[in-house]
Image (tube, rainbow, N blue to C red; front, side):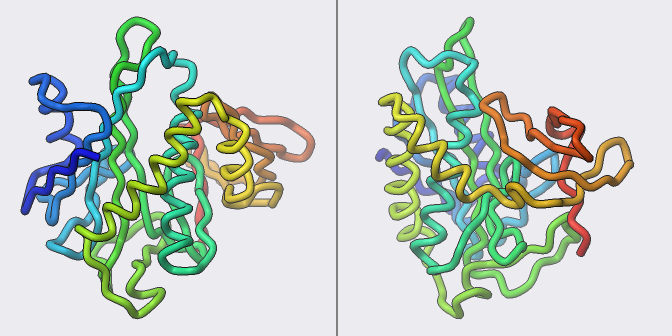
Length: 245
């Protein structure tokens, strides 16, 4: 791992994009910021990024001979690595909420923002932004899913510079399985940690709230929902979970 630690930056994903554009980054580079001024979440939302309160990082991978159709399988691999890290560190179950959130006791602990650079039909670079709530005791904003931190769950305080090395080990295990074509290992872990799998859950689409059973998430990133026997291939962000807090 080539680790770059920044005291403060607007966004680790923005910084990673700049490194790639300037040709200054190698495979397996990780950018860690101790504070972000413009942290990015899903659908253009900000990620709270106060100094030393969370882990704000971007992993940069430069895979060879990986086609664009495998983008969401790679997403599953990275999500699985983050979930495995969380479970080791707090000794509690961590579930993956489609498409990119990590939940503990139905509260959001972590989120991913994965962007892929394509050349033709090949993935030439992966920018995987990972935010994990480490030491927060409260949160300023209102969220679709209530938030929590590792400190709130364990009472312990975490050092981002130590945690990033542990996180990297877990993410890299699943990334290497992906590179080596061992997709069954990724699928098994992801499916066994999928939030609300084979359960009735609330969803929202175009301001309409409905209930359905989440059967699986396919390798194109679609959630396969069963609503009274009707199969729905739900794509994000048109469809998303409705969390009734």
